[in-house]
Length: 355
Image 1 (tube, rainbow, N blue to C red):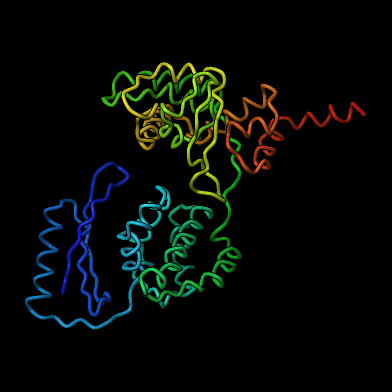
Image 2 (tube, rainbow, N blue to C red; image 1 turned 30 degrees about the vertical axis):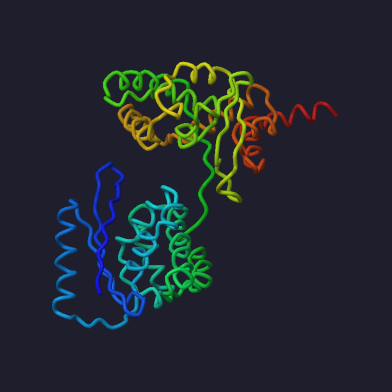
């Protein structure tokens, strides 16, 4: 009658938690579900066994009930096909939603006022409009899958009415365009501090090589930590970047990227101890960078800003927008055009002088 499953999940700090879920089915349909998260697997096992025995030994008769957003999120997380294809950022947001007050709302009774309350809570906690929009977009995505995947009713159509209201209230919005580049002094200080960190930390992550490689190749840190030796072409000094981020195509978007300047030499320095050239967790690399950055008192600089720094350097070397796109992987050249025009607004004077 009742079944128990335990899912191991890694937190942002590297620790693990264990979510125990007890389900009861009737005629093939789930009529009851409850779950709790524990810091130790033994505790999760014990709780699951007690609840299972309580249900079966005492012949608890469970009636069909409406499902909460929290329970719907549990279904989503426990579905290997859905959760396995969910990116790290989306997973983080979904986990946060699971522990938010809105999770107690019944999925089929979600109202615009519930979404407004959630957005206000997130805004008051310091989240920006673009960040809060991710909450709404990912929650809508989950709820839209409720009926076809889990045979559960969820009021996902409420988002059609709610989103325009949230935009009008400025509770959600688009992310602001960033123009931040590290200064020469900031880079020198970062490299010096990261060199010292390399000598001290046990995992031996080559922070300086990865930082310089990230700038020279304009790759995202996730891409840097995924490239493989087998995809390296020594003759042409290129590498295949697989499944490159593209809003229109999430998988199979492979690109051959030239290893310009000294990036190829950085690759040759690495030891072939793994199928990957940089066999390290991207989160660990980013975390090390952030700790050093904070220690140095450098503000408003993200690892992703190194990608913009790399593109800006290519423009400064005289590469065209199309050539830079071959390195960065941008399908939308308007984004690179914005980078270019912010660098060289004075070039318009040169055009006028030519007439």
